[in-house]
Length: 243
DNA sequence: GTACTGATTGGCT
DNA sequence: GCCAATCAGTACC
Image (cartoon, rainbow, N blue to C red; front, side, top):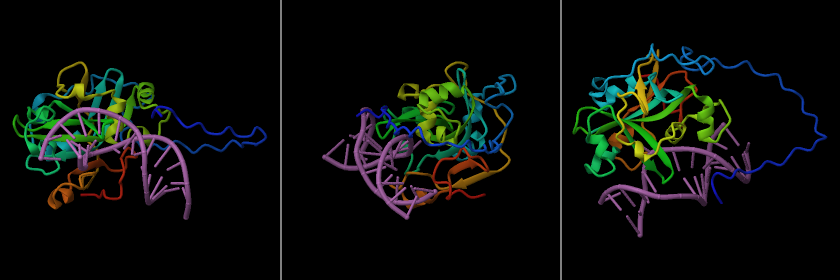
């Protein structure tokens, strides 16, 4: 059976009286209200980031990516959760050296590195540091800023709740990415771009997710970063703490 | 709310 | 041949 086929819920008997529940007031807990879904995105205020922004250690770049905007056409996502992967890191894809897949990781910072995970999910990373370093930052979660309908269509989910964009596979899907986007420059207009954005007031840190195969030192390293107070954070949340 | 599990494909140790 | 930087559906509490 295809994944896309959805389980149909049984139709409720027509005799059931459904009372209209009083709606909860909408939570204004999203990270930054500046541009919102209903408030179209203004490009002038948030210039595209230049290559020099990326030429630093992935551990420094990762928290600086929080609050920045990923844009592809009308879809704009604000980054809310990231993880750093570094040279000599037993969890980094670059740990076996340059291969056809990982070559972009060893290129200069400012490019995308997109790989297929579990044969299903396109995971977006942002290459960090100087050419030859072999470092990147995984984008784990985002908050929708514009293009909600396109995001929902690509995700196959008609919701504004956080399930829409909390998880690296979901971010890749929402942006319509495939491995063909690997090595795409984020500092040139067109395609996928990274725009400047507001710095979060507070951040959370924790160990990275899904890297149990790595050495203890790297499993325990607190190289995951998230925007404090944002609902747009993937599971597990209980391992995140203030620095 | 949490727990478990099957899906699916390319890269490599 | 093994297994991965995951997700969504289902069952049960």
